[in-house]
Image 1: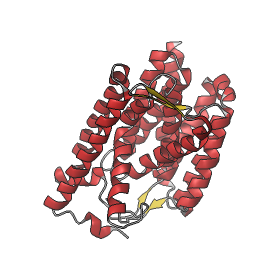
Image 2: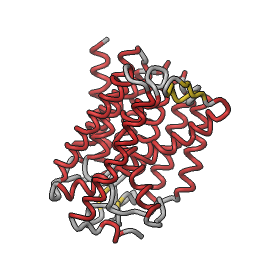
Image 3: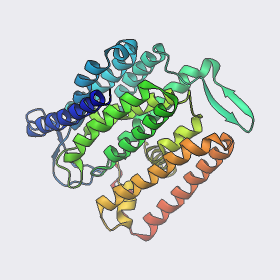
Image 4: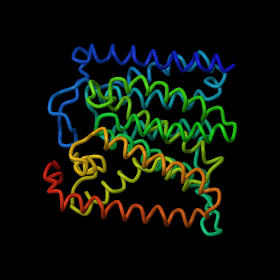
Length: 343
């Protein structure tokens, strides 16, 4: 059994490298070139759309080894597939946030049909908060937020891939503890695929994952987060995927306070500002953020068993305030011109 598992993930890893290399070599022909903008760090156009490669590897291999699981969750995989398609379209031709919202809304309905929905958000200071009729709308809100959170954090070489692997490893661990096959096999498959992608994306990157990667990974993270709610409280998930979520919250608060659109690109994200603190050392920035994410994940999985979710929510809110103040301090003291880049 272990040998079969080992073979599966080795095949995904090798195919991921092979497919990403094909995308990279044909990026110009496929119109998969990422142009510099107010949010990116690179100065020249670079190949993008590596998500087509590493997710394609998973899409081919996964059903061969888990056909029964694939069939039993066909609505889930259909939802992932349409998000993947809109990501590919965005990489090649560009699309609007409105179109992405519509596709993600449709995908959320599909996972709802598959039984993946948020029915309650946990017990806070002794009060159990059930959602009732608001289950589907709240699930849509959560999926939309999680999906876009990873998309926003995808700003420097190696960051989104590294954070995703840590988050998926957390879901694998939860799946292992509670014998949830779906959490384990999807998590392990994506870790194997991302390891292949990181061969090309670790700084200095030669290709980016694009929306085909970040949008789809964000959606899958949201799905596995909801699946994990059967075993851990909702507040634990805010820690398991902390860095992307905290970055999104910070960006929305800052942009609203400054009177800018939430969708306006800039270089005021957590990774951009931390990179300034580390004098442009991208690898150090990624490793520090990855370490912080690993700590958050540990806290979310383990402390949620012993501490009331209400207290953990207060801790999380304090984290939001502290991060906001720290990043504002970086902007003021390091002469960051990130806000001047907002369009």
